[in-house]
Image: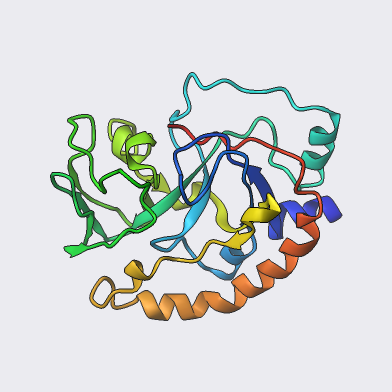
Length: 242
């Protein structure tokens, strides 16, 4: 019963092995992912950092590691994802109905509004001047999200998977949950709030109402974070492709 409750409703921890979400997340960081909020009807919002199942072989060719006995046990009780799961972690940039656009080196635009993105890795431009996906204009269908890494020139995300069966979009049903806390190392403990640029006027008239609806469930999820953080020294790898 405990395993079922944790796996279904509470939190899981993931470790970051690559640089695609720098400087928000560093290699070796352990993040705790809220799996509770979606049960209250909440869907991913712009600006959130989310973990999601590989939607269409984004991780093809990536190496896998064999879990040890402790990792296997923690996976069984729900504190770690299954070793067979192929998960990624990125930032939500667009949700259903949004138009997301990159021209030249930026800024990135959502529904015509330019985003101020201080979380983008220093030295990167918000948009890339390459012909492999760095320049784009897409309309996100309902039930999908468009995701990008904060290390824009070192992240294989929605931009570079536009030839897959979802055109680079991630189905909402594949989202595991929102990363809410960096739990380890203790020197980097912090929450992962939505950046203010996603609250700018005119970006979405429904944004403030949606945010208000999700405050209480996220608060409940954070209560579950505390006991899970006690084992944060242990590591499980999230496949976070470059």
